[in-house]
Image (cartoon, rainbow, N blue to C red; front, side, top):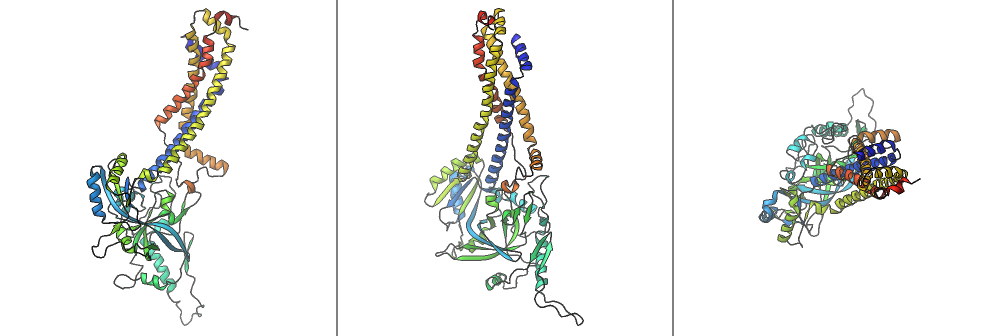
Length: 523
């Protein structure tokens, strides 16, 4: 009992120990915040990457792809069917995107991906990343009659408005077609009117601060695109080209306040040029209509991906055998019942398919360097931050030595009254444990409160400093992701208490070894 009483007294009266407690508190709180933010980033990033990529992919090593996807899928099911939940064929090729904004043509290098809309959503989160509610239920490469999301549907209650999406779809396309028709019509005059000025009228209108300008006249090749299969003239009021789903970052840019500014909308037409699969390859060109946006919140994909029905891309690239009608594909994407079986399925398929023709990888294999870099960064940060608690441990060691020297006579009195050496040892070890408990407990509370309110704190710091603490244009997240992992919190708190106890061992042993007579005679 006397050990607990002395520990409590030392804890209340020895204010110099407060410095060690503060060090432990700051170290624990910092480690909890950093680990929570890193865990949040890692989970968000892995979830988004896994949403884009399938569990396992069987890919062609050649640009021409491999024929007869159905036969390949039957072969895959025969080898690893008990692990497989769904499969879908895809064709992915580099392409050149061209679009017109305010009378100027822009070009982007993109990845043009042909998919089966009925099965692609079963192997990835493709459907979830679309911006029209009906497409998220059953994706179609058709232009919708409005109803597109006017906020980020995954951004929560605080997601900023996307006002220009209010007119996306057929309303925007008809408005744009009417504008072009009005600009192409000759000016109306009457007998009493003054003669019309020479030259065409100003070919522009304004909506939401954006100036829409009529573009250049179509050349012969582009005009040929404006005829349908029956040879009738293309009517933009009622017709669309083949639909494409465009990565949202190809059609917009993000401002520093986190809002998105669009320069293309569903209903706009774009042109895509791809190399054919023949020898020698030639450029195949076609006009498409944007029918929806794809937002995975990974800029690598949102600023690079355009999706189209797989049959359209196979036709453009001349990947369909004219005799058999069987098309070629560049990969087969596989969804597993359990993602943890990815390595096993990969090895089974590698043994079945020749490595010279096929590349077979899991999504973790594809993103291995990135995932390893995140894990390494987290480990290094933990090592550096744990040194803060280690510094607190050296502070406890120095303070305890000072207390032992100061209380030498008191220790002699306790020993002369019958206190054993183990009891003296226990006093100082318990004192160190108390410092660790108080410091790590306070750090735990502060760290958890900080994590819960981290976005509000970031906003306050931004107001005070005038600079964005968390720039959404860099990270493409509306908020700082933070996930508290209970096991990580436990080992941080336990580690802090262990360091406090270990730091008190040497002073405690010195106090336990003091001889009562020598201690009583100490000045």
